[in-house]
Image 1: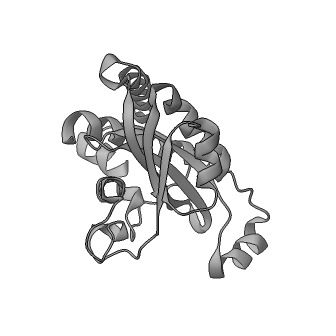
Image 2 (image 1 turned 180 degrees about the vertical axis):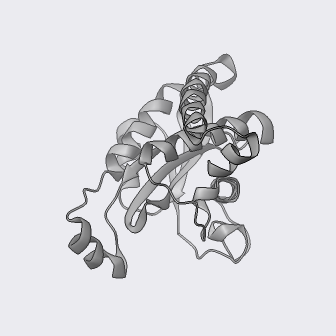
Image 3 (image 1 turned 45 degrees about the vertical axis):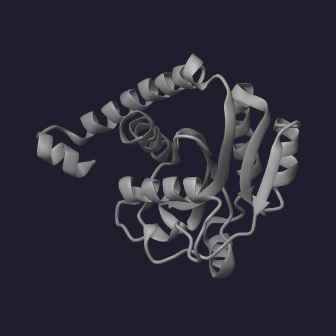
Length: 216
């Protein structure tokens, strides 16, 4: 945002206001597009969660993402708060206190936004995270849900593409890699960190529309 302001010779507050305005317009455009005749019946999609952070890695965020099986269109996403895990868990608890896990609520909101447009026998694919099966059953009771075993990331693709030959979740993982490659605050190593969760959401809305209507 600072670089945009410098290149265009405008105030940084102006850039921030334009980001908010364009994200609001982009969300309305996406909602209109997802309800259009072109997207009336979603026959298949893949979903998973990406991880990023706000301000520091001690305050992680989860991005639940759904991608259509045909055309690699981003059907929607939800940003949710989550607690730190692994060796950062104790440090996060000590410095910032208890951090509520809102990933289930976020995934529910994502499913609510697309369930009306999914066909009754929609093919849904994901990894084997225990949370996913009951959530899919709740929002897509007649769907076919196939869960694939998770795999290690390869060197390329920002760690999102998987090593070891054929990847049944390639459409989803490729889209996640494109998110990380095109949205600078999602780079694996970057100093363009997210300071406010709502700004991350607005940035992702802009990329989602660009991905759906230009790149794909």
